[in-house]
Image 1 (cartoon, rainbow, N blue to C red):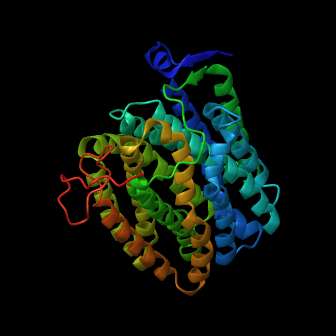
Image 2 (image 1 turned 60 degrees about the horizontal axis):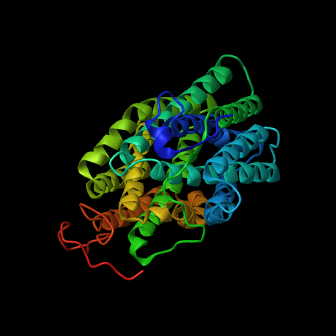
Length: 411
């Protein structure tokens, strides 16, 4: 097993044992389990455990509890290096997905979902933190775009093999869950063995970090978490319950979605790097408003599927929130702030699936119209991002020209 190297030495070294390559390998490993779980969950829960919309809402709220508690990531930093946390988290995610198919009951699905979600959210926190620490401000959007692209490629592999197994080989959903989970575990263990330990240039603070000057970052993160839940939970539920898509057709849709996303994601990164965070987020939220209004009124399955794919493309621009934070943050705040921000994004995620799951039983259309309202609020917040954000230039007033920075508040 390779030893310890600094990030700078690893970045400048020859060959494939570089920090960026490690992040890409882990990004490819994660969706081998998580994408299979997400693609088959609604069908599996409906067919095997007789879940209705309200039960699905409860399940997704349980899934988001570890995200709400992601600030506890800070405590793990006293025991493990972030790189090790990423490895252990992916292994837990894989084992949780592996077990999902073997517990087709209400309590069984809640338990396996909680376990895999702990792994998923701790990995997301570690990955976000390491990506911002291990790359420069100029290259961060490009790296984040490549990570999204590689995640898309991993999802393509998972969806493609899953669809073939379900459609033509007669494999049951339980076996597909198991195969996806074990694949993530295998790739993660191989990466742990093959790559060295990387020492970051700046030692990260171990305590919780909450600063007044980061308030816009926190607000954007919160609103994005709320919007994400409507996309993840109810856009897929619309396709299954309103349009009756079977599990193999859902997997095929996810496959096509990720194939396009893996192509588009690096271009999104270059777009953010070229036009900046303010314009990128403005473009994203304008598009999302239209997409949610479309969800509320669509009656054609192909249009609904197209809106779902388009929604995913726009969500990729949320990387601009991370690069905005990288530009305004103290470098030592990145790791603890990654855990805090993930918790903030999941405050809404804990109650939205339950409340909206009940609302779904009354009016699915109203679920999506309220999503358009959330996107409009996010648009207003995005207009407060400076054209050139930095320490001392974190926000501009909503009705002041973007080039005129507001005074920096006290921390």
